Length: 417
Length: 130
Image 1 (tube, each protein chain N blue to C red):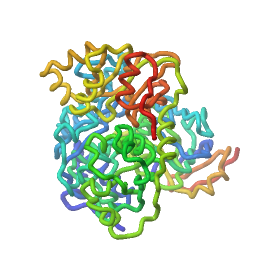
Image 2: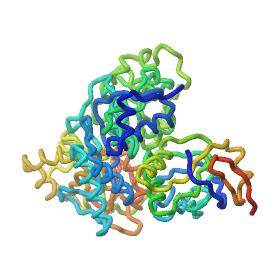
Image 3: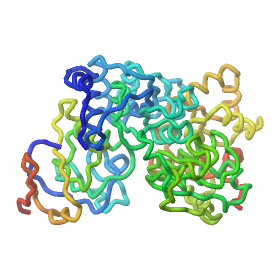
Image 4: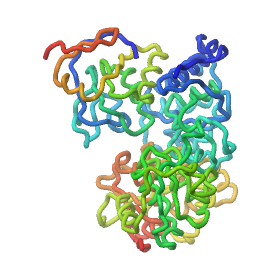
């Protein structure tokens, strides 16, 4: 398959400005991926503004100096700093300066300073069937699966290059023939009360990611729409344990009105029948600490908490005071609402530490404590916290997390039937 | 992907690696404690990769290594990996000298283990002793 640019694209790529750099990067990526052409995109979500080292900052500043601007609506994923000042990030002088310069550069490219991994709950919801270029694994999987817009898993540099050129390589999940499920993930053998519980979705997501890997799968056996926050938790956990870019839930997600449609009328290559034992083991695997005698912190909000999730948190706290800090990660779109209604003050008085614009696994916020233990209800935090923060993890439901934070030790009350 | 010819010692990896989290972007040391070559440095070596796994930030780690002078001298990949190679594309766009990358099926990698390897500018690979 040969690759070609249009005359207009070639002319842009031949330049010496920021737009030319972006077009050359998109074209080179298309060549490497075997795409025949570039296609126009309607929006982008940029994961590239998280500081990993000086070169990323210098690259973004090179684009700014070259006069580049994003050609489509582009929201920003989290950065390495909490610019709202809600929480304190323990980054040193030079790193802090370079991280801030990076965040500034992306804003100057015309990206919206949303600083959230849940842009789809901050008003950025591309229409069904439209092509977009999104980065950050949970945002990608939500965009494809729940909104039915079309994106590949765009990584650092390629996300902003697509946003500036307004184009993406035509391959992978942009093509309808690659969006049909080839595997069935059958949960109909699980008890209804488990499927209705909060932990079902992150636990099953983490199992799904391990079992399905890079394939497109369809979940079978879900009786009712579990709600958007449940699908968000499922996708985030699945995209942490596997390279999942798109899932379907028969009868729930937009490209799966029923199982047959999700499979595009073909026989699945694999069927995974989830047993209660598989779900029990998947839940156990989310914890790395064994019977710790204390917890040092609770972290929730990966992906960033929605207003509805704050309602649940407040209900669980019920006016009491926490013994250990509970880090609640969210976007400034939610923080603004919490401030307007006075709820931020109440939450902070109860011992909640709000974290905005960033989160506790991508930048040092949790205090450095030898042998520390973190409790979470997020499958994604459970996956990344041990490697990125040094904290061992205990997984539990939101209610279990709050009750444990009241006592400073693990309280698991909801057993898995 | 083209680049200047090199002669350097080979590092043949026994397992796929995730650059993000698996390689220290400051030093080029393999940081993944579960990786068979944990503790080895990829800086200045001809790096034979049986595969890459994991994060889409691999390109950012490779760019950082090119930027701070701790990139491999050359990359030899079983399969082209667009995300990793994008780090080299961006390095060139930034005016940095990026290592060349070429494709060689994994079963042929082990013949180069522990040897000094010469790669010519046109992508020919040979043992040069060691």
